[in-house]
Image 1 (cartoon, rainbow, N blue to C red):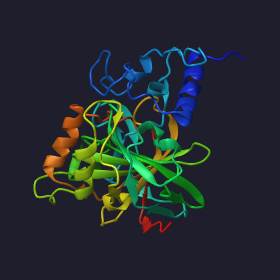
Image 2 (image 1 turned 90 degrees about the vertical axis):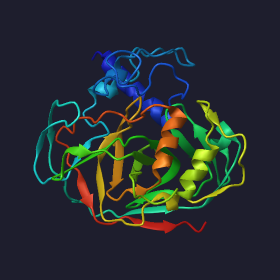
Image 3 (image 1 turned 60 degrees about the horizontal axis):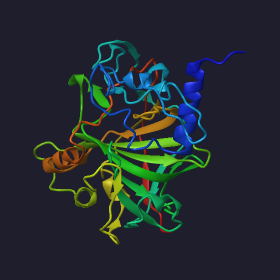
Image 4 (image 1 turned 45 degrees about the vertical axis):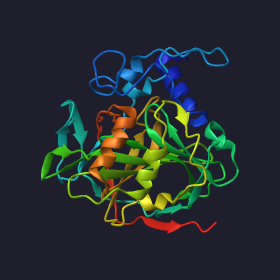
Length: 327
């Protein structure tokens, strides 16, 4: 049986995300919403047309980001909370099948068990550090906090353990929330993604909306720390600020009414699918100035265009257990 370039490209994209992240200095893609290179295109699929470079073993993949266009379970999506099916993508206006969210059908518990950590200046070497540490990073695509190999924080889904690898920010938010009072969809000021990776490479992401509207709380102290120590230069780590404590649990809203879960993908190239998404209904309140500061570090909107739901059902969970890992 012959293998098409699409199958090869899709397989290579999956291998790339499970073995090593896409280089933050990769010149072949950015988030700009345009109809021609560079950018993600008017519907978030243009990344799929970008040709790849040779890898260390000289294997050249013609279209390493093919899944960005051919995938049927892409992220982000519009979370449909209206109780009725929606037939159009609210942003691209393309035909879609977006069924209403419904109560969860699974009984697996979901628990966040993060631990306080201490900042380091180890940079790219942090991934091999067997201690409990983190670094501030400007990936060129997002403001990010990356944890050491020995960091004990994790997400527990039933009996499965997903260690926390990193968290990063998008401004504005990537997911939209469609309610009867927001028929066109509400987009928040930002979105925080906690990225977890199981030993076999499977990913699970916890998404938190950021609300920086007028009347929100004062500056969030942890976000303030992150903004102050994230370098301005792309694809760099902090070279100062070692020894700063950070508890990721403090970035999770106190209110915890609902969690929306569905099967999706990465929201940046290679857009690999098979990612379990958990998006909290309650946003984290931050100062309006902090949203502006996050945006100014990259100086671009780094959200992906809302993708078609393609008949996927979003399930509504009523519980997300949050505890501290005492180890």
